[in-house]
Length: 270
Length: 301
Image (cartoon, rainbow over all chains, first blue to last red; front, side, top):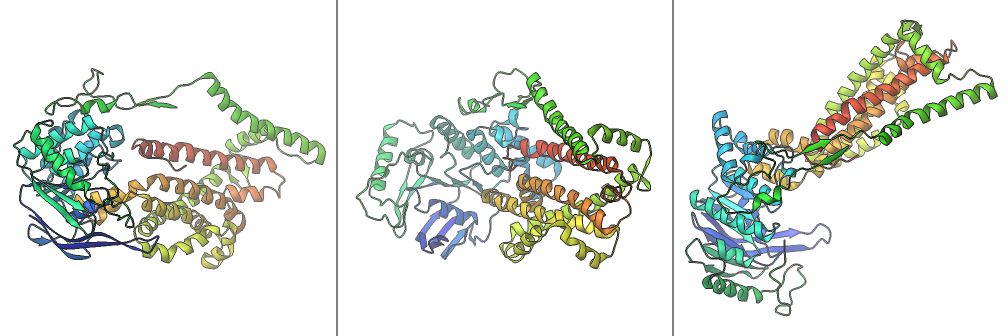
């Protein structure tokens, strides 16, 4: 469904004139209806990976395929949920969900029906006339989910969607996301730096190391859902991934590549 | 004015997954999310009153002093008011009624400002969107803004001759630059994430401009309109004085000195101030409240 074929991505840094390598030689494929979490330290290119599938960026070399075709631009078949609220502040909850439907030329009745269905799917019917600034962080993320689901995307691309939320809200939204995902089966690519989150959600966790290392581990998580957050299996899988991550270099800056001298703090927020 | 947000929507995020978040215990069918309260206090009213009375008192003081010291009849607020009443009853000022002058000035300003606004917003959207266009044209626009209004007189006369059209041209050209500059800044300030999101949601170019970039740049755009309006209104007076339109508030101000009707020109100045205030308070501020404030965006002025 989603395929990266030897993908590299370089970014020129406008200020220093240096070229930063975000991804090098990544080959990865995500199957239809699979829930894959991309896990890795901050700055290792996770978001870039997602932006490439979304069509916001082009690879410097290699190919990114979606459903067998090279990705050229962003489109409603790949619904993106951003970390920060990317809702249009001047539109109400309903209007935000309707925005895409209107663009895609759905007729009036179908738009109305879909807006209602998806706003209530994420539990925001009572807030349908509210504007984004009147909503909490968690509610904004629900609206983001609703507005992409309303367009029946083939894949959901999520870039640390719950990263800025408090722990309680995050757990709750994870459950809701899984619940929705069970109903509306979709391919899901979910970027996070939170190990527990990855283990709790994914069918498969891909650990991304900073370039030039690339994919450090590709671990299937076969536990049945619903998973117990505090079960032994969960703890075991989490520990295994933490061990992989602890061996990765920290990668916030291109210069800090002294491997192994620093142990990554995995619980850092946002 | 005080505002308060009456709910704490964060509460709705807790609870079992299947549970729909209900509005906090207001009990009403629709949740009240936003309550704007207007509190009229005595001290506030006094301050407002003082803000009007103090300048008037200063004017009066100056008028009395100047009249005594220099022996010229500097109109007091009362003189001006009497003259205003006389003019309002249809007395002529420089051959025409005050209504004719006012109407002509408003028409010229209206045409000039509408031209500047429509062209300015369109150019601003384009310049904010295209880095190349911005680099090509922004130096010119910046220079345009630095040219004092009156400096356009020879240009206007050469281009359009003496009269109505020259005044309109001067209004348009002086209002244009700040509107373009601010709209451009506004578009560039629109969060890149919103543009990405809109494209992901299938927005075409038109939708992107009208439903994302235009509303997104509105806080800046409104401050551009403010400056543009003030520039245009100021140059209207200057334009009428110099380009020789034969009517208008600015024309009357300069002409009434020949008849020593200083109170008459003061009336015109007062009307110009009042109209400025009305446009600002009656048009731009409500527009800002209904859009920028309601959307929770930050104002730029």
